[in-house]
Length: 78
Image (cartoon, rainbow, N blue to C red; front, top):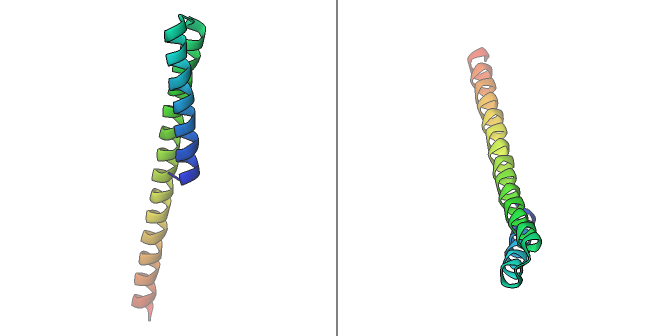
């Protein structure tokens, strides 16, 4: 996960925590629900960033494997 993605997710989570806490303190169920939604959004952002990282790793691994196979074939042909 990139640093920018981490910061955005953390900021969204903090916003959600503050809204949820404010809603709880004031008895404002709408504000509390908005806060809970923001916290869920932050979780989704973290999950999406993690999946993006994993997909990149898979692609990198496939590229490396393909290069290794090509190198092996070239050596056998020489």
